[in-house]
Each structure stands twice: as C-alpha cells, then as structure tokens.
Image (tube, rainbow, N blue to C red):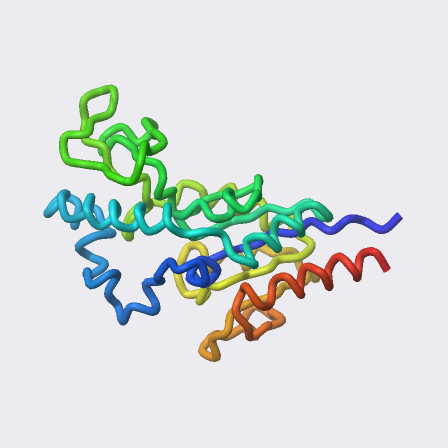
Length: 234
C-alpha cells in the first residue's frame, strides 16, 4: 500500500494579501504609515502603548472585514486527502475561518490578547477594540498577543518537529528572509518534496531546492492541490 504523504504548509503574508490584508514588504518599510519600530517592538510598546493599541485595533478591524481566499480554501481540500499541518507566520485567522484545523501560529494571533506581565494569561478578543485600562484578571494591562520583533518565538520548536516529519513541504507567500521562520526549511527531511508558491522574481528557491511556482497563491494553490491529489490516486 502506498504511504500517504504528510504535508506541512508554511504560509506568510502573501497568502493573506489576496484577502485585502496589506503586507509589510509591500509598504516600503512602513506598516500602514508607521515605522515597524514604533508599533511592533517591545520598545515601541513602552514608549507609546496607546499608538500600538490603536494600530492593532485597526488591523483587527480590517481582519474582521476580510474573508478567506481560494488559497485558504484549497488547503482545506488538501487536508481532506492528506495529513496536513499548517505553520503560519500570519496573525490573522483566515486559515481557521476557511475550515483548516491544524494551524500553528508562529507570531501570535490578532484576535487574542494577553497580559503584558503574565504571558500565560491569554484571552480571545471581544470585538476589535483594545484600550488602555483594559486589564487581565491579575490587574495588568492587556496587550496584543503578537510576537514582536526582538521577542522570543515560543512556537518555533514545535514547528521544527512538524517539519522534520514532512514528506512534502509547501511554502506560500513568504520571502524566506525572516528568521527564525525561514530556517524551518533546513529541517525538512532529505528527499522531501518542496514547493514555493510566490509571484516574486526576487526569491532564491534554489537555496532550499524548491520547485518555484511563480504565481499568486489564489491562482496556484487550487491547481497544485488537485495535482497532488491526482498523483496520489494514480
């Protein structure tokens, strides 16, 4: 009997951009007109927490007005045929809303908040707005449940273990330049198949021996999923 391949999918900002969520790369080094140091670092939070809260309030509001696209939906179909684990650098919930169940968020989740002191105190948001004075059960300010630049990535070790078990790795919409996430491919087993789905010409798929599908995720993923299913059935 043919072994059913285990598939790990690494997703970045490019898969969500087709749902209308802007990416940092596309914003000329600014994120919604803000320097990344001001809104996505612990130092920025200490300097001006009100600005950081408002920035993420607007991201949350934008997310709640967005919907999963064809690429998100294709991954749901993929998981019906193969054991599939999604590891995402994105903080949105579009994978889950499309119907994916096995999703690991490397960089946190926009629709969750946590205590700025007690990191284990994490809560789902109620709506899109978080304000100064919104406190956790132990009386400390709530902050976005986001891994900011300069902070540890607590889910990187579980992600590494998942990639080590993969027969096929599909990378979607990421530049492979942000570490430690970019280093995950180094843990893929020798001989595993690796695909990169991204329209950019500036990437270096040969570095990781990736098959580069130079199309948008929404266009490429439905076709790639159908091809993988057809190959296995043959």
